Image (cartoon, rainbow, N blue to C red; front, side):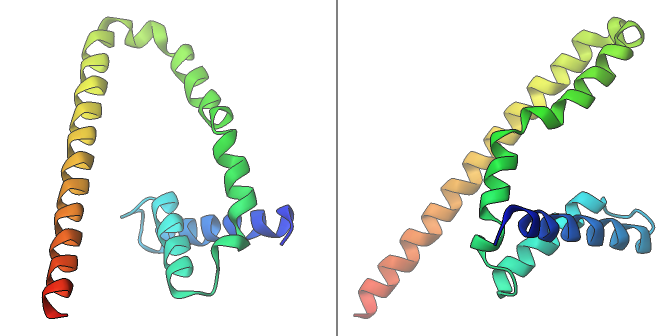
Length: 125
């Protein structure tokens, strides 16, 4: 599949997620719903990894461009948030540490479950 078709698949999931978010009256963000839809389509087979791989790789390699609008937005309001910058940085550091800890714990639990399943399979043989 060429890049345009792959981008079309990704954009269709994004638009479908936004539409679903509108139907749910914003209960969940459209981008989360779009990614969930893409994941379900990849799991259940209508879309295969090679249908979106090249465009997804391109977007991941150029991800810095997607952060530019957010950074410029922060620069525009920096004078207003300057007095709270330490609190903002503390929250960023704390949430980063919590995310890293949650990820490490999840990986640990998954490895334990995988080892238990492989040991049970070995015991049954």
